[in-house]
Image (tube, rainbow, N blue to C red; front, side, top):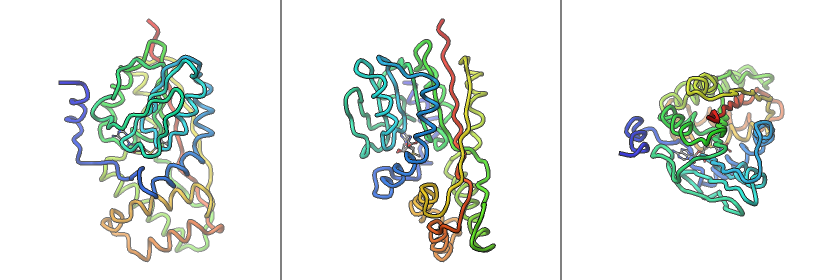
Length: 275
Ligand SMILES: C[S@@+](CC[C@H](N)C(=O)[O-])C[C@H]1O[C@@H](n2cnc3c(N)ncnc32)[C@H](O)[C@@H]1O
């Protein structure tokens, strides 16, 4: 039995990823993520260090912007392996090898890798602990594992047109995270546990960074919330949201009079010892 088969058995496949990167909404989803998160992500990766000639793995690569950023820095002699279950938005290019693959069944190519990056992937996977171990094992001596995950920090409203709108936002956050997310195996508590897991796995130079900002109605963060709400509509209805609530919530996310804290992104990095 391969390591990948063990992961699939351990987690089961009943809790599938709830969004569809290959859909029209998925294109907007990836675009919003990249516009909000690429600047802090590349700043963090830059500080970790990415050099020509390195072999990198970008897992759950989504729209591919970080794969391309890595390829620009590791080229012309390096390689970036970009992996996702939906590769519709992943364009290959010099130094990039694209694989359509489910990481809960193992890696599509053998390591070792000088840098493994995954943003907003493990938080979604019920098998995250086994996948984490697989990634540690795939690091080259001196190689870095870099994970970026949303935390469970409350997304507090800063200003809203009315108290009813404020309450509606809180209800949608509750339905999206405490009900739907929890039922589908999403763990927002994972983000702040990653550094401890890196220490326990024997990685060195473990460190992290948190990034958060407010988002205003019509801004990219609010458009991302709106997009996720649209993609998850059938599930939210099952969990008790009403069509009227969904309609007002989506209006609110376009209203410049609404502002709230966006998800906190927690970066963690650790390095495999050289010896
Ligand atoms: C929230 S998106 C993040 C995309 C990208 N990393 C970013 O931050 O912009 C999660 C990505 O992981 C992919 N994904 C989900 N489950 C996966 C799995 N089991 N194996 C590989 N990719 C997966 C999805 O298709 C999606 O593109």
